[in-house]
Length: 272
Image (cartoon, rainbow, N blue to C red; front, side, top):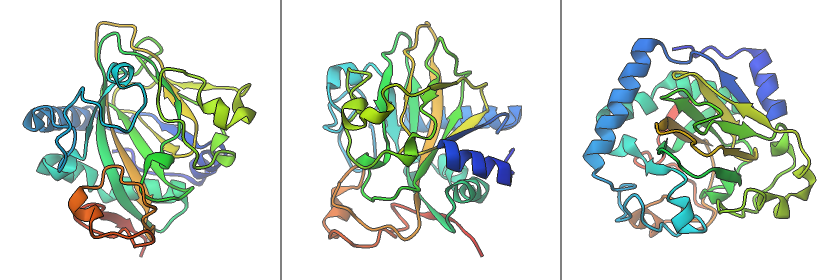
């Protein structure tokens, strides 16, 4: 695993809100990740996330325009909670340290993992932010996005608006049909430069949860598969948004409570 993070990479990430790391996984590691994710998905039998009855293709109430969104990507969440092999991948302290260094924090917790599969002919993913969906409010939160297939301009690679994380906030138009809906909230970025992020399988990117990003449609007959994980800096508190938290846990929370439940948001790295 190519897990070394240099100061130059930290500086780039802090300024631009994203970074691409080529050849993050070796060929052997990539093959293992792909096999493990497929096994975990097969075990789920279409269940989108643990503790909830929502199936892939159902309206989850989170994203606008459910019929359109369900043809954007298939999203399977918190595979680490139902498959020990995925848990081993997601709990890798080397990845946690990478995330912590880029974010400039001393502790990283998993918010949620998710397999994101763009099926053949899938719709584009409109420009959006991540953090406003989540149950905590932190400008340093971030995600890793690991390409399990080559992510190309033709099959739905990511795009970023560099530096947008420095000017966005926690207002959220969601992910709907209109690619430009985000600019009704953040019009200052409507004429911004965008950067495509094609990646070879086994490469990865990290991006800040407040970086405006999206993805092309899949204009091919093949899959574009990615395994991702969102990270919460240690010490965050509940903001009242349910997001992926199970009802049994929500019933114990009040706004302002510390989100430190190891069964839901495990600490995978702490600087010593």
